[in-house]
Image (cartoon, rainbow, N blue to C red; front, side, top):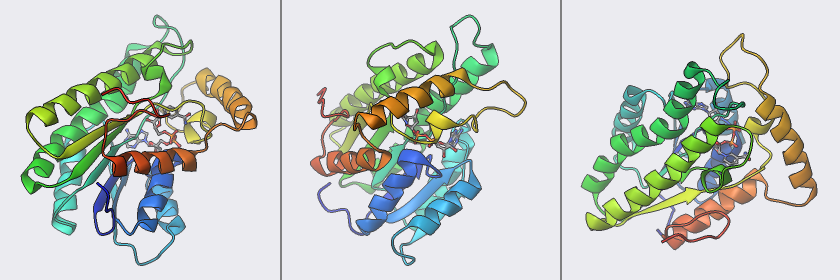
Amino acid sequence: MQELAGKVAVITGAASGFGRELAILCAEADMKLVLADRNEAGMATTVEMLPSPHVPVLAVTCDVSRPQDLENLAERTWEKFGAAHLLFNNAGIAVAGPTWTTTLDEWKWVLDVNLMGVVHGIRSFVPRMLAQGGEAHVVNTASAAGLVSPKGSSVYCVSKHGVVTLSECLYHELREAESSIGVSVLCPAFVDTGIAHSDQTRPEGTAANPLSQRYAEQVRRATKAGKLSAADVARITLEGVRAGRFYILPHKAIK
Ligand code: NAD
């Protein structure tokens, strides 16, 4: 998808981190924006940070673990803009702990958001994108933890390996369907965003997340070593979309 101006970008997890940075870059590229997050206040801040107040924006409160929320998001996208050209399935959470201390509620919660959230996005948007025809692109955010299995959180690794596999399957399915929809999967690590610093995504009343604390320390080291920022990740994401190929950050093609 070489030409982005005038196209419609749908971004989940748009209230913070990669989603916010991508929203800013898409606005700079004159795209129309559909922002989705469960954090309404964060989305309002993202809208305030957009470079031009005249960018057409639809902001929808949405919990990606709920299929009906994604269906509502797709309906509202087509009502307002009549199309979607870039779908960024990006919302995600992390919890810490070994397999046996991670509670069943946490297993369900992380898989529902990180993996099923991407499935719900694909199920609600891809049929409509196929029907609209022409070029489009789906970007799913996995993680380096979706390619290797670092220590820290088995449920997070499992969810992100699932997103990588799902993205590869989707790529082949869409080629089989002879569509012009590209698929990319992002696999970054240690980028300074909300997920590294806060426990905001945990249900109220639960203990602090030790993964966040360890992660924050790793982020500090990675940042010192001059690794990527969230804005870099967003820029590389849009480069991947423009190149229109299956693409893993940083620069590992797995086609
Ligand atoms: P972030 O915490 O800054 O942003 C995540 C956003 O997702 C937040 O705005 C949050 O409100 C939203 N969200 C969480 N659960 C949601 C739900 N159920 N429904 C809708 N929105 C929800 O973190 P980020 O780093 O920008 O994370 C974006 C993605 O990148 C995540 O999938 C994360 O796993 C992945 N990732 C991050 C890193 C990193 O180092 N930051 C590395 C690898 C992968």
